[in-house]
Image (cartoon, rainbow, N blue to C red; front, side):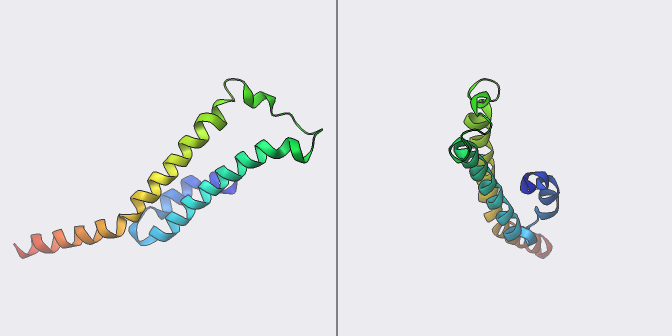
Length: 104
């Protein structure tokens, strides 16, 4: 839950090429958080049969959370990681363009 609660702050602070590895780590932690949440949600009844029922998550609108929103957010995390992996080459390319422009 801490990963999701601080996601906006982390995204604001870490979305620079100099923080690329930290940003990728934060995205991986976000994916891990989603996987753990779904795993615990589906196995909670096995751990404590008298615990809360997961029946509300089988009916709309709550059924959209595990079936639509979790996969969507996972895809967003993967896209962010893929784009962040290109940051270093993009910043190097920008520097090359700037050097070329100064030379002209």
